[in-house]
Image 1: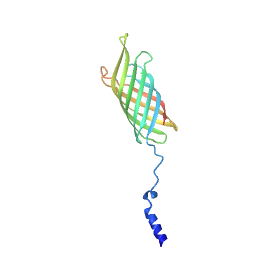
Image 2: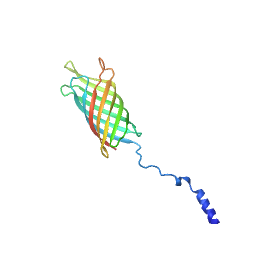
Image 3: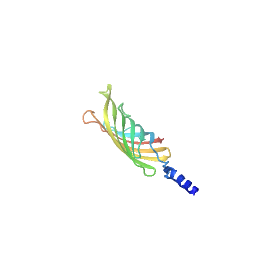
Image 4: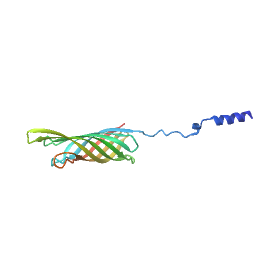
Amino acid sequence: MVKNIFFVAALLSTPAFLFAQASPTGIRRASLQVGAGFSNANTDYVPNRVNGTTIYADYDFFHHLGLEGEFRYLKDGRSNIYEKTYGVGPRYSRTYGRFSPYVKGLYGRGVFNFTYRGERTANLAYNLVAFGGGVDYRLLRHVNVRGEYEYQRWFGFPLHGLTPSAVTIGAAYRF
């Protein structure tokens, strides 16, 4: 009888959390990747396409939602015309096996450099928005390869504004 009372008392005093399920341990809370790429663009100013580089960083703080920061430098090889852009904004992605398609919207600043009347160099800056999308392919555990298209709209550029578009191929290290 004493043994039964002791057993019932021990059973009733056992905390409920001992009977609970274990918390999942394989959930990724956030993801950061930093990369660079080769860009080819229609600057909407010179008749030929121009080449350049892009540096980007993506921080996904929720499962599908994150933030992207980007710097792009494009230079015309035939003249001293170049465009530099800096942008940051939201990024939405999904994952299907090794593929992660995404869309993004950036707000930032663009710097346009050109020669005025063949004698002076002008360097002007404008606000811009950019919309784009692409796909990251997980090549290795910490290495992604990227293909992307981006369309920009520069505000206040003389005449009808500036609307460059660029295609970028690059790679990133994912932390």
